[in-house]
Amino acid sequence: MMLDQQFRDLMAGVCAPVSVVTTADDDGPHGATVSSLASLSLRPALLSIALDRRSSLLSRILATGRFGVNVLSSAQDDVALTFASRGTDRFATTAWRMTGGLPRLDEVAGWAACELSQTVEGGDHLLLIGSVTNAASTHRPPLIYGHRTFGTHSNFAVRRRPPIIDQITACAS
Image (cartoon, rainbow, N blue to C red):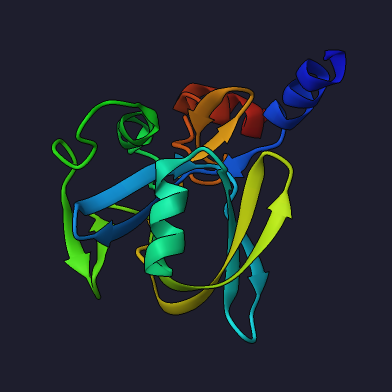
């Protein structure tokens, strides 16, 4: 359908935070990269994520009723790609630990533990609303995704200063 590609192109221009959503069950830790994280409410603290209905992570979260949100830091594009891939042990090459029964990745910009409070039908995705039970921020610059590439907000980017001679010349003018 022609609108499919137009919609994809439109949404590619919307910068989004990159997170790895995790859960754990008797089979071990599970996780996937998402770019649909959104703050929903402050009181009570609620957030939302959207997962493809075909996602194996979705069925595990529905079964456990819990999930973790690891907001990736700007240096973790490799982690985002690892957790977006299929057929690999995503946790084998990533530093992580269990926190409150949920997999928590190291070096992230932020972390939230959630109890699944509601689901909302959304076409080929299911919107999960999580009640935040624990949250932490490291103040590391966040990883964002826009125009089909990883980056970070310009305020966090390293700014190159002009050569000192340019500054002196500008002051003399």
